[in-house]
Every structure is written in C-alpha cells, then in structure tokens.
Length: 123
Image 1 (tube, rainbow, N blue to C red):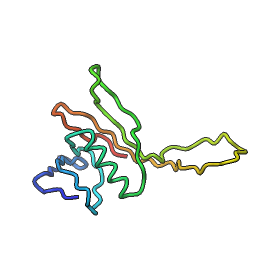
Image 2: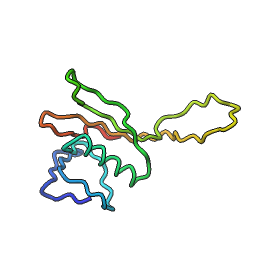
Image 3: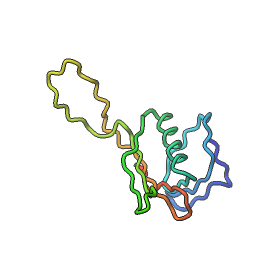
C-alpha cells in the first residue's frame, strides 16, 4: 500500500492521520492504527478486510450504532474466529470443525463531524 508522506501527519504516540486511496495490488501490510481516517464506511471496511486477508483471518461486523436519524455513527469490525464455542452436542453424527480460536483482533471506528471515519480503538 502506498502512503504518500504528504498524507501522513503524526499527531501523538499512537495517533496517525492518514488520507489515502486503497491499492488492491499491494504487498505491503499496513496495520490499522488509532487515528487513521477514511472517506467512507466502505473504505474503512475494505482496508480492514485487506489487512485481515494479508495477515490470515476473516472478519465480521461485530456491532454498530446509529443516531436518531438512522445515520451510522460507529462500527466495530472483529476477527470472525473470535470467542469460544460451547459445544452442546456430545454425540453428533456430523460434527463440524470448530473455527472459534479466541482471536481478539478488532477495530472500532466512529463517524466524525467532518464526515470522515476515524479508527478510535485497535485491539
């Protein structure tokens, strides 16, 4: 992924302000960081999906929150393998493999007043 130096501004220890266009054919892994900004919810999703694919895990939308007008205000994307399963079937004829691994990777982003999405939490 190409990030031009003019688009990056260091705001603090963990906060980076980045405005860039996603490149589909990149080999460089860009980790999500608090403070990264995106023009749309879809751009944020595409960025995290690309990162997850490069690192090796699937993602899912874990939670969202909308305001009174129905406008999406914050979203959490997480590793689809997160959590633990509680198997209740002890004698199943077709047991399915357990994909839950306890993966704790997730990002939370919020919609700002400047109509940009900003990553507010990375775990």
